[in-house]
Image (tube, rainbow, N blue to C red):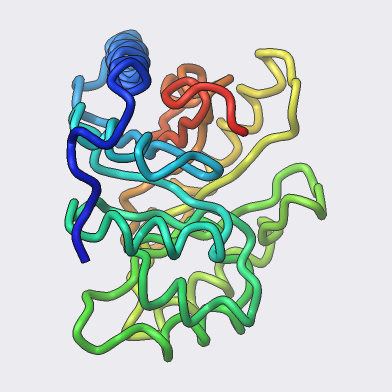
Length: 240
């Protein structure tokens, strides 16, 4: 299966994506410098849910390599169409039990693991020919049931469940704070996840990824220690 040719995307739309991506990269770099960190100390995951394959390719041609999708049924045709690009795909939506096989087979990362049973399904369904699936544990800090996530007091048990699956690789933590927070409130949520991350690392868990921050707050998240930000509309514009 081949990808889209360079000429199939609208040139103006592709230029818009490239321009917005460059601005996001500059903002990420500036936030890292303010935090006294190296310019390359964070990964940008371009959230491409509800975006056409042409927009993903435009971002790829502009240098973007990591992309995030939230809906399996939407993502699979897009992944197949763009297979030749060799992009790295992150699943960032809530995981349904009946969708774990497709996630285990087609994605490189999962940001939203919240239950040991799902960990077992992903581990048992990860193909032997693929490297272990990179896993982040989603932590619920505000108790919002619609967003999912494990409670902090259950975090170690979930981490241990992932470590018991040889086809999974535990990489770190992820959270989504409540929407429309003021700066100080958002900072507290990000600082809380960083504290949990450090506690696990100090307890012997080998973690390297702290995924927090989206289009509206990624600079603040970077200042609080995030090294993976999930940015959609700031790169691709408004979704359909």
